[in-house]
Length: 92
Image (cartoon, rainbow, N blue to C red; front, side, top):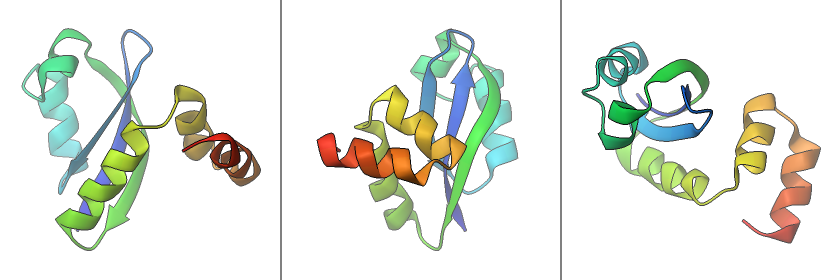
């Protein structure tokens, strides 16, 4: 099982990534081993996770979410489907 996840970072940004083990990956990010951005802006919490059967599907979803605005990411995190639809109509 693979997951797309979003983290809230110490600077308030939302970091999006994929992993097959969210707890391990969060720990890596928290220790500064998870990537350049989270090395400088450590994660505070996992905000969102979405499961996928294979890595390719998770990677495609990750790339889609990374193109989104913070507002749209927050709508996804909050489960606000009507806001997601409204934001998708304006742009992806």
